[in-house]
Image (tube, rainbow, N blue to C red; front, side, top):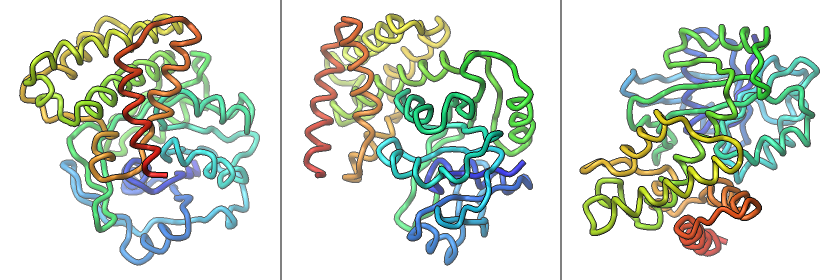
Amino acid sequence: MRILVVGAGATGGYFGGRLIQAGRDVTFLVRPGRADLLRRDGLRIISPHGDLTLAPKLLTADQITQPFDAILLSVKAYALEPALADLAAAVGPATMIMPMLNGMRHIDRLIECFGEGPVLGGVCIVATTLDEEGRIRQLNDMQELIYGERSGAESARVAALDAEMQGAGFKARSSTRILSEMWEKWVLLATLGGVTCLMRGTVGEIEAAPGGASFALNCLNESIAIATASGFPPREVFVERAKSLVSTPGSNFASSMYRDMQQSAPIEADHILGDFLDRAGRLAVPAPLLTIAYTHLSIYQNRLG
């Protein structure tokens, strides 16, 4: 199976690198600047699961000459629009697009561009970042890809994709409830992003502050209410895990948006919280705490220009 990974940053570079290490046929679609860096220094991963340096196959958009079997779309949400134009020539009648983005807005855009057929659902669970040397650093041992037909059906193409993902050095599984799993991740990201960015601290730091734990849990309750009203009520096992994640004493856990803010980098506020709150508004679900968090993040975004 010929796999195109769109974006060789912290997320796509990590999973694409592991797939190459396992012998899969992977090519990265990258912008010229990133391509120059990768050709010079290689794709470098520093990880609890083992460090890795590779010389990957690279393409820029103007070099695509034929469709790929599968596309792993791993750009940040604010870079989605140029990425859609870049990857268009790689999409053929039998191509599967597995998005690894956060939220749900990207699904609508993919369908608008390429139709219903190619677009799978996807969830990516990993904590990685690019360091000052352009290396991919994995921050903990979590690493999982989940994918499936948005309809919930089992299919031969997803089974083939699943076979490619197995044994590649990370956890991978197909799902017949992929949209629900995407919504559960969205609930957690909206909550953690809102809480850690607004309070400018880790989960443990927030929990230790007066009212911190109750504030985090109330934000979680707002997120759960939005998902439930949207037709995707989170499972009880997820809710209990999420409660623990957002309120554990001493935890150094924080959202990737908070890490990005610390580095004065762009953030996905519109896609993780803005779209979430738009849906809440249409469904008349009150979310005052998440609204305050989004206002705070919007001010930060506007300052970046």
